[in-house]
Length: 283
Image 1 (cartoon, rainbow, N blue to C red):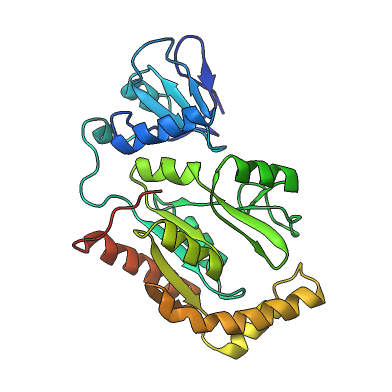
Image 2 (image 1 turned 135 degrees about the vertical axis):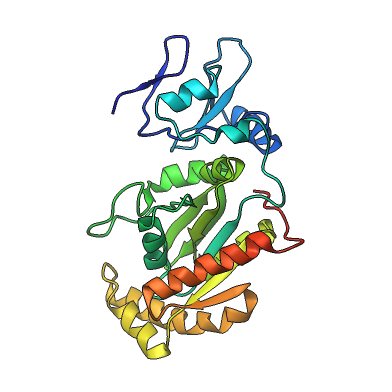
């Protein structure tokens, strides 16, 4: 893929930086300040006024002084209207899919991704080894325990927990960038993670993904693969217990048929966008 010119002899690969944010947005300005403090903002303006902010897929931000129309002509994804006005109302959604192992959270997100909707689907970070067929940056960001600890120390994770003996976390910066651009964000996490995110971000929408029956839940847990016999037993026991938490969350979607369950999630999102008095998301 041909790199794009971003001014003063600098180039960026569109593979890692397709989206462009409007710098006048208050949310984007706050994000830029935070990333400058964290050393994750790269200023390529050469002292000129920042005309666009480009988030990279590793969480860094690039500040450029190239007109938005010129960036769009090179292939960057830009809504030029955002450079004239910020989004009205409560803004983009943060949708958290939660539920026990085997409920089908990943399957629903993968189906929504296949529909090519303009959502940002968050990729979690974990210290466990990849399972067969899993890909870095698509299924998870696979990191060492040392790298995970550094992310914790630098406050880069929205939420983190030890799940079945594995450290997992939700990277904060890509979510902030997507919300600032006006894209609805979807993520999946376990029950305790969803509780923590709802407490930190009251404007988040939590959806419990439930299997059609306990028998089906146990079957899915056993057929996941990649876990030891002991881990399967723990997952199965925990999964059944976690279904009792359904009333804690905003909505429940029964995943008995994948396309219908994914459609139900989108119906909830449509309803929430129109709901009067919805609380804005602040991450």
